[in-house]
Length: 335
Image (tube, rainbow, N blue to C red; front, side):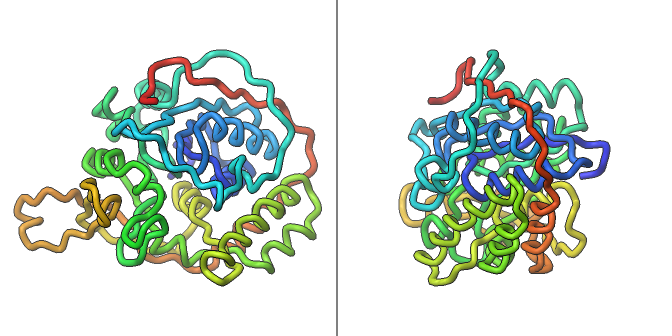
């Protein structure tokens, strides 16, 4: 993303989403135009509340937050993850409450409105299940052409998934939506588990945050501690993956050493153990009219992003922050 583009963020604000929001909000060169929320780590209304609280903490309480889809394209409820992100999505760490005000469009409608109003200006960063984006595509099939680009954190190409052995959580939560987005084309970059699991935060990073002694780092240290506890229980190591913060950094062009490949991918949507799998299509007929879309996939990073993330968080000061604008869902969404 170059400096002429602003950022739309679609997220399901759990712990790593919160760290991504802080990473972006603390960068004065990043223009966050709107945040939209979707069910995933937590329900979309709580995700909106979380997003507003985190943005206020980072001095960006002016960013409007719009609530999106609670249910998938197939009308199932999104699968929440309290065991990973806590019952409130933020490791059960509480930030000061918000004062909601005003009525605004729901997430999909707002994404379409902003894209139509300023074609080619906004870059969309999708950090959760892709339901809002799929709903937006139903409203405006030209959406990929109206956006400067799309960066998606999702998928597991050549490694095991984290929701099932075959599927990454965001894609598994709404495979139909993910397939819709991949097949829509456009300037889309996928940031899969293949790279996000290699960029981590550990106890040393936690100690750095604790020692920085600011409201932002105190909060980041507290939610990271919860995240590290989960990773130790699940994987036997106190090293937490930087899923969403890494995708955020890639979306705004912060990482120079990034390797990409153009890969033919599809998403399995039928019931069974393959559901939600992001499948690499190696068939020779693909080049002669196969059905799998070609997607730019990030396949290599430097392995040092955790240091950059900590530096960004430690750059925060102790400003007094303004009240954010959280806008409840007011138009039709799949519920």
